[in-house]
Image 1 (tube, rainbow, N blue to C red):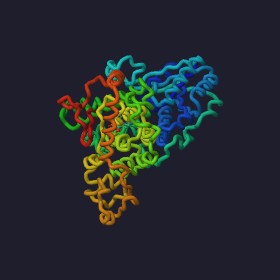
Image 2: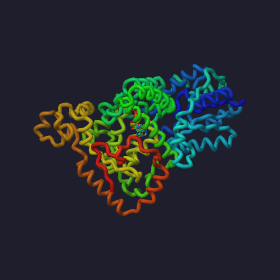
Image 3: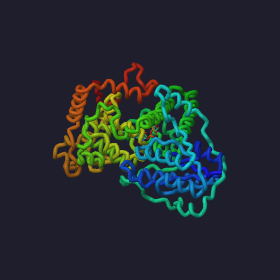
Image 4: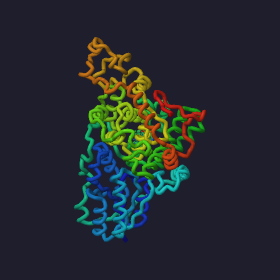
Length: 518
Ligand SMILES: Cc1cc2nc3c(=O)[nH]c(=O)nc-3n(C[C@H](O)[C@H](O)[C@H](O)COP(=O)(O)OP(=O)(O)OC[C@H]3O[C@@H](n4cnc5c(N)ncnc54)[C@H](O)[C@@H]3O)c2cc1C
């Protein structure tokens, strides 16, 4: 009987784990994680990702131990390791979840599929959440998602037949207490990073559904409240310490109880919004699954040439990513993201709008730079959202967030800005959103000299937004975009009624957002 290898990737749990359950049913099991050095050299990987994974691997090993198993960690090229294990163990069967990752993992998975065929290794890949491979038509997608989320979670048995793979394999593995401390680029200190591991994920889900989520809907837009009222489950979903189905089902049990008690409460409305986001998670990843090139080229090819990738100004990029654009709210959000590895959705969208419209940079390099800052980096959501917020999907309303209006709306008294930008600590609310308007005397009084303690703005944001609108209008006028828009809509647009659409049927732009319907 061949050894049953469970190849862990972005599914670092034992619960609701179909590959583990199948492997346990079929023979002696060897759970494996491969640290792939070439992956960790990619420009969208970062130390904070590895730190989260590392903590999750340690907990996964402990969870496997409860079933009489352990996690075997290798470092090297995945297919080379599987070939070697196949020879060393006299045959293996490989079980894994499908992954929709970046171009590197996409290529790696193709190599593994081909390698397994050549080596005669049986490979069983199964879906991990609502992404369908291959998807015949978007029309069917929502039904697939619902069926998968409703299905019984797959619980592996309590005990397994472990496999002792012998001295050679023992010698080739990295003991769990000696996992490398560092992998990946983007080594920006992240003292406030969320801890990895399933226990932290379970605790977040429980506290969100018990108390924190009540004001989710009202509090999610402002970075002042979002850290508390949002679920903060994103890195756990991205690395699979919890399965999406577990989250959907736990949430729905809570939702049913609340609906019976108080159907119109904040709670009920908040949980409805939360479920839409769980749906969007797979909706966005499905786009990258269907068109992996979205990682590097425009979703709507008619927008090729709108911005020139080779002309990204390194000074502007550095000012943006280091939080020194001179636009205080933008810089404060970036500083929070750098220090904590997370920022809420609205502020992610605003950061991208500033990079793509006000600073007029192509989305590609900024997308990699932000990927390195998000602990929850999920390529399918990330690149598709980036394109949507940069106006290159051709099917979404353009959202040119006004960073000063966002600042006044989301941080009216400026406390958040002062927290993240100590140079502005003494500046009162009247000036904090636009310190460049302060006369020299006031700068002296409040202990900040612009250009020395805090930068002048890199752009006049109002003029820059006008310029961006004009450029896009001119680009659109010169091209026939309709046919490609129809293709994008057919291939990628949601078919379900858009959640949270106002009753009038016309989508209202969020406050502080200059839309452009040309
Ligand atoms: C430019 C940009 C890049 C982004 N990159 C990522 C990324 O790399 N990884 C990532 O997980 N999310 C990304 N998002 C989506 C969203 O901002 C985060 O999922 C959310 O802020 C995570 O916090 P949370 O877990 O508290 O979310 P909650 O609001 O509590 O939502 C629960 C879950 O739903 C999913 N979700 C929420 N919002 C969205 C959304 N707009 N689109 C798709 N799924 C969503 C996430 O899995 C999230 O964990 C990005 C958004 C933008 C605008």
